[in-house]
Length: 119
Image (cartoon, rainbow, N blue to C red; front, side, top):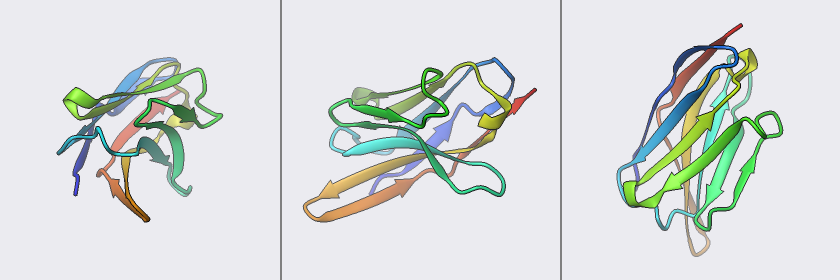
């Protein structure tokens, strides 16, 4: 089991920046992948960015070049640096962790943090 707690959301004007923080209740060193998802009103939850234990990253096309995901295993923390924010980035952002052991994968979610970007 792992509990995830997000922080760092808030209100910002278009073009501004925010850094989201996901704090895990235990070591994230062996968690196969950690990521950030977002869900806007009336839309499906979508992957924003993810990072593996090896440090490989992938991003949604809509955020490439603006967002950066990173992890600090020593602090059990994952970050999402968001720059050049746009109103369409407004959503609830969720931290996700995938823990794979053999043929079993477990998904963990945080409670979400609201990001609001005004034009």
